[in-house]
Image 1 (cartoon, rainbow, N blue to C red):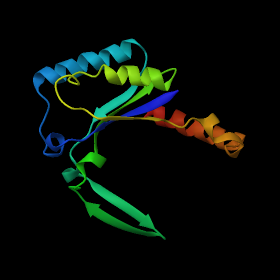
Image 2: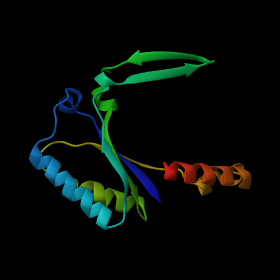
Image 3: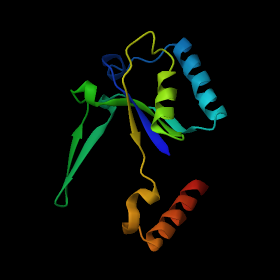
Image 4: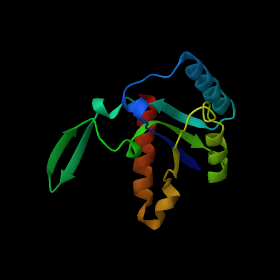
Length: 140
């Protein structure tokens, strides 16, 4: 099972405040632990919403809204994708995040869809096309 762990933004992350060397070191060690355990698929921090845009698509039209976005509690500042046996295991890793005992950190954990989750609607032809696409993407 794969889970996306979303790190919620804070006023500091939205202001562009970068983590300290100590926190970057601790996060590097934490990420290395997850790699060593074979659970980390991907993980990145993302820039504040002031450097982003939202795209709303409706009836063939696109509306672009540039950041910053005001609802900080609704934004994310980073993510991990974990390949684990259960949501409880993903929660266990999330609870070990460095700095959680120093500052308030809010994480959201969401399961990533896999082919079998789509049932019979995901036909053998669609599965084959998805596998070809993934193989091409992995080569890049």
